[in-house]
Image 1 (cartoon, rainbow, N blue to C red):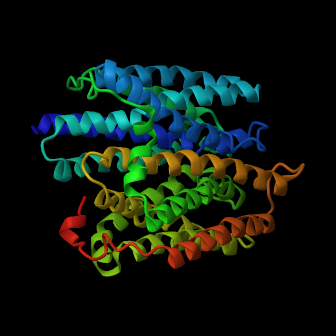
Image 2 (image 1 turned 90 degrees about the vertical axis):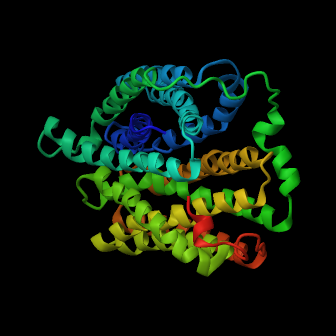
Length: 417
């Protein structure tokens, strides 16, 4: 792969996640500041709905009939239009949420399309793709810094950028830029042109039949269940930070993405010593620890506990989700590998997050009542619920999972991604 192509794909990945990070970590604060404090779970509901719909669009349409870079560009341009209109509907919550749904239906398919563009145009996927993909994490981090510090110059004193529509307009602008930029990317023909693609393959049913075992089912169930409290983190951490007096909310949350890069580097060291079961268990334990830190830190707004809960996000994500992807890859054969990985995404970011967003929203609203925000003591009680939930999932997993397919033969070299 030549240097120019690597730069172009890295810029694509940077913008892809910059866009997501700019609105996803701020929209709940914006809604709470505009009379929609009891509806903040809906953006985190329409996102997994779009994640469930995305494989069907990509598998049945995008991968079969159109050049990938063109579909990718058109979706981002359409997404820019929907996101630009979204804050203008702030006086009508239903239209606001429907516009966010339309935006997410455009955005979520681009996640897999970005991977398709990268994999098709590189020669060594294992060595070259991580270098490209890390720019996505950097993009998310930069988005948080730009929102908190860059947009701060355009708001009145005493107002946080996250409380305004500026992050949403920034998302729309970045989406438009990426949409136009996409047409400069190398031509990538539809990867499944002429092939028969079934709903069964998109849902991963064939992969599930071939991989089915007690431990694999326990892994799938645990993955879905642990994604339920994840929705509470994405939805309510930003509101929690506002309530505990933090400024620069988006930038503070980007500490979680910074820690992802650190824990990713540490994973090979731990993986060969712990094996897949205890790596997954360590990931789930960190979910419990994160929410426990939030709960314990809430009543007195203890800064180090709250930031510590955010900083452990890297361990939560890498040790569970990345290890899970490797576990599935090791279990799979080449003809079902793509289906199996798609199945994991579907049940975690789709089904698990969808259930989690609704449950977390109901929980938050039950605490909220007729008030406009939770007290610090209420936040203490709120965070203990996902903490206990994560602890129960951890115990179920430890006692029932006993597959050693990875832990017996893994090595640091084999693990490296």
